[in-house]
Image 1 (spheres, rainbow, N blue to C red):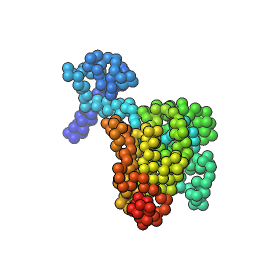
Image 2: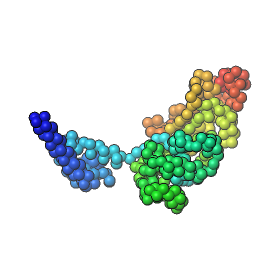
Image 3: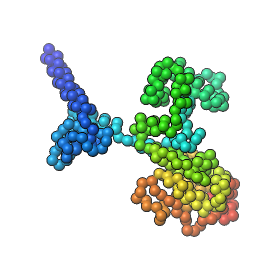
Image 4: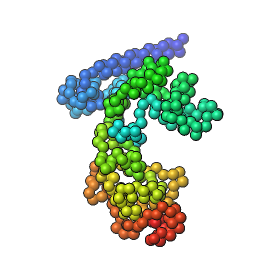
Length: 357
């Protein structure tokens, strides 16, 4: 009996605490718009003012301007702050509508995202080889994934729930419940790509996304040169130089020749400098093969001598995302690049220097 009485008292106390938390959370949610992160403005004592869209708790601000957040309200304050904070997506494979077919959007692109395709193959018919699947037109691939993961099975995996969330947020819950892929496709076909992109960014709370831009890809480069296409500030660029890091001199030389640069290390440096000026990228990136070893790579001498992107006197490095290209003063400057792996590995190039031919 004593134990039961103790448990009842503890439960009652817990309920009272829960009621207090709920009341304070409701007061917080109903507070007028005001300063950043839900904090009260000490100069207005919790009244309107400050950043648009934020809300304040109705609490008295101490004289020093700090904010009192109690144990009972901290969860609500933090949850609201996180939910309302604008996000920067620092690495994406998105493209703006102005880049035409490079912008992948719509239900078929969602359904054929590689996470969902991988999940599809966990239960796909044995007679359907991956090669046959990927040889199909994109709409047919999407239909197979839709049937397997959203019709025949409940979409409860992380990847499928992501698609469900997107469709619900876009107002397509009824079509989703009806498993109406045709209706969903029709809705997307009626959307203006520019307005749709803005709508998605706004709903997701994304301030801007950083693209992955490869100047060595002719199809992509066409949207930057000879005339750069203007696009929304929701998209920012990042310079990807995989061919250089992988020592793919054939791809590098084709790009240099097409752009009118000499197929030399100095030409590659100038080529990157030109793209930095064109793209104004946030950062430089490269993905290397799993067996990449810097010392043995054909690019080793080229990269080690700082011919690739580095600090420039013309660039203020205190500005986030700013960088330039610095030329090496000796050695490999002007060294010819070769597409022959043997010449690279054996050091039999014109300069007779390992890794520089």
